[in-house]
Image (tube, rainbow, N blue to C red; front, side, top):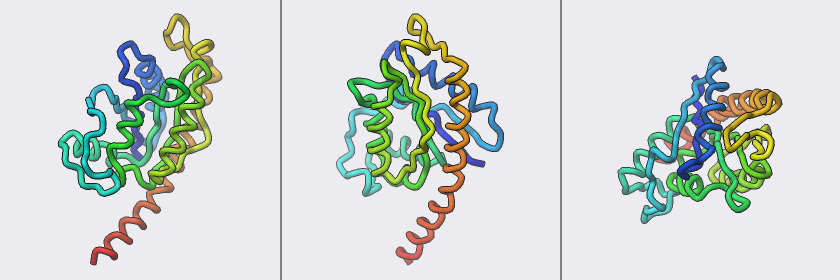
Length: 195
């Protein structure tokens, strides 16, 4: 069964990200043939990147890095819930992405963002970062406006935004499943090279 992580990309006290991610998860849980799991960066307490070797080397020293790598490796795809801070994503999310390498490769990602302008610039930055990690990002995207989808800083998504989750889920699930063959071929090539 395809397994997709909904990653809460903010660790800020009082963040909106947890409410947004729970809304996404409640809608995702209604889907069949796929398993979604909430992954909250605030629970991982990853320090500022402290690995001596680049993530691409796969030689993780820290126990926190090894645990994070194992968690990321569990999934076929990712749905990032990201705020927009200063025209980009959060430092916590970028840090978490940078911690590991191959665990992201040949998988799919989608985005639900939020901010004054719906978080669109954060998503564009994430698309660039993830492309370097061989993550295919889907075009469907839900961008929540702090002016229209929140009331007194509480999430109140419109019916239109809830409906927009469906094509996002559809694309992310299809690409996550399709890339399984790419991952299998890459693993086969690695095994042949090691033999």
